[in-house]
Amino acid sequence: MSPSRPTPFDLVFGQSAQEVFPKIRLALEHVGHDARDRDRFLMLREVVLLVRELRPEEGLGEGIDQLAALVHHAYLHWVAEERVIELTLERLTAVLRTFTATGATAEDPSAYYAQVPQHRVWAEVIPGHPPEPLDGYFVHSTLEGAALRVLGVFGIHPDREGFSVVEAIGPRPLALVRADGTELFSPTLTGGKAAGLFSISGEEELLDLGWRTQELEAGSWERRARGSELGVAGSQRPAPSS
Image 1 (tube, rainbow, N blue to C red):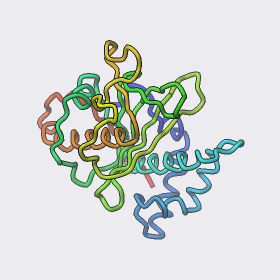
Image 2 (tube, rainbow, N blue to C red):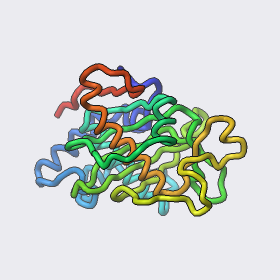
Image 3 (cartoon, rainbow, N blue to C red):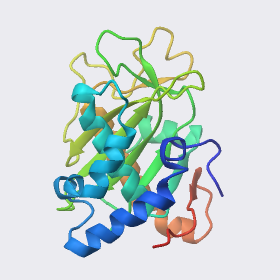
């Protein structure tokens, strides 16, 4: 089953992935590097050319790091057969409000994109600017396997060229609390609670969201195999060819 709406991967790499990413994979195989090693990944000539191609003519300044992160996540997403996890509103609500950490993680987890219901989760991506809605987030484990990289994608809109991204990296946050004492993921927008909205406040909450989804997946493999209804829809594209 395909995602209900295009993902950021579709919007940015849909036309070029099958041409560019196989070349990157061959280059990685030639030098014997693990694709999760971002520093070495970004040093590949094929990756440098892709980043330059995607960079706007006016440049990005500090935003070049976000573009590099997007390219890295997109490549790993492609290698994982463009796997998408669609969180229904019911499941998203359970994950954000009542989720209990189990400490479990998926064995050898592949990269994926978790897509959330539109205009339900918001964040102030740029301090002092209006909040933007979360479309979803790319997730993959780091080379060491003890941490996650979570790239949140915000502000996708038909009338907007591009979108905003924020990356959080690390092991699962412990004893995470907000400075103002409000609950994690509770809305910061006026009227947000009545409207059933959520907010991400800071990179640690984004990272925690990635870990919650990771644990959700770890606990759902067996139940999905038995055909139970979890409110989570997964999809994969055909395996990428060389």
